[in-house]
Length: 128
Image (tube, rainbow, N blue to C red; front, side, top):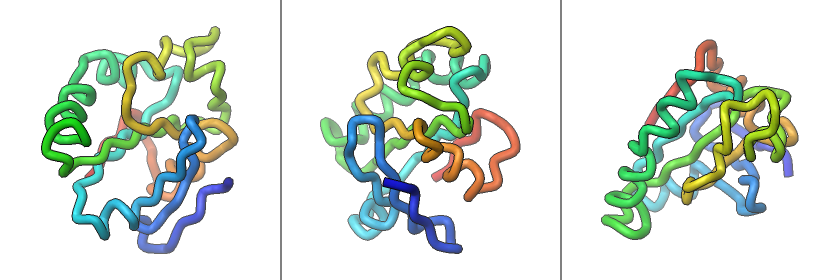
């Protein structure tokens, strides 16, 4: 499934690496706060942020197992993203999937389309 987006940048749909459909508009219509982390598999500062445990703690406290007010979505914005790179293949900072209970988007150009949609010029970029 390709990323589908509107001009407002807040109405997009993408497919996570587990095959689930991620719909920004669905989350927003449910009154959820959505935190999107657009990173790159090769990015050292992104890896430091990712391995700090902050996202996992937010997910634990405010995601489905906590207050259920927050949705976290992680995106590999690099056009070369692949499952192998997200799992730590050569050229990646490490295994981005390890411990990540929230959706990951990236392979097949999906993450790059989202990064381009938001005009990302530096990694990591986080927004709500």
